[in-house]
Image (cartoon, rainbow, N blue to C red):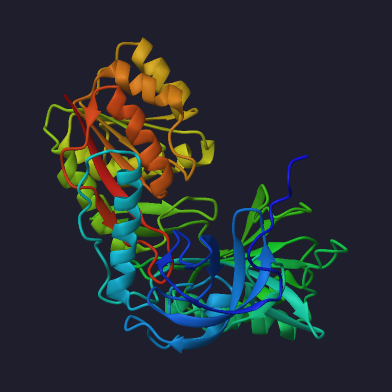
Length: 456
């Protein structure tokens, strides 16, 4: 009979341990007889007292009780609720060390994949807070009062929050105004257990350059007194550009429903990236850190080494944000996205900017690249900005068949970037320039990066 493995730690056990590393999620790592223990808010070099809260077969989680020897890189947290809610899980780490941590995460993954790659220092922010231009905040009833806030990590317990720290101040102000108006009109908050109640979430979007403001009330049931509520919000938020309602009857975690209607103002707001204007609707994917997005896209522009006669494919093009920034530099850009509404927005944004050397198509990126390859399209440059799951293997095969001079990979997930890098390397594409991390999400473990693959 196979002997059952016994972990060297037990649930609720109190331990004093030394932290040796950080995981990619920003958890401190300690070892007990080589058995990993993951501890939120703990930093390398620290000696800490912890309590084991969960034991798995190959690792365990522990709660930080006391810091016996603090790290020189520790800073005083702004607010413990930001860690509890996952808003700013690295707020206790010096910002320059956050940037080093993100560079190290990329470097370590490339080393493990045995790819000889240089990772440049992370491009950070001068002000690494109050940067987000979008918020989607749950609304729940606590002790009979409508509250806005954020869920405690790994739960649906709402922590009431008024200052979200990483959001544009105009967004925090709008949330408080709307919350108070909904309270005044005694609008019932949504109940996840009964699926009754009216208001589920409040979405706010803000144009960094335009200063235009959009509020979307996400409702489960009819919004009674909608006109009076609208007038009350407009009176307190005279700068509001767009006020909409989105109807979401789903019983799951879906954030937005399919039906949206206008209460006041315009249906979209506008903003710009590197001088290119964009219309943004409630459903639009638009990068949430406008300052760092310009730096990220400038890296794409610089590293793509574009020529006036180049043909470019922009896979996962969304509302055309990268395509339309690249278009003035090249002969033609072909963009593809699976979301039909995004392609509609991309075409509208091309018209808004007077750009006519672009073609936008609704399709799965992997299917459309295979079609373009079969049709004989030979791009000089392919740009990919995929979701966290990375590239489909068939898309990589289509790129390899097209033989572009360069592939510029914008990644939001280092693990899938490195996985895809191995496939591209095996197909004859190598990374000759340093990989450039960009800190799109300060105070969190997330990192975006730009990598250029060049054909041998």
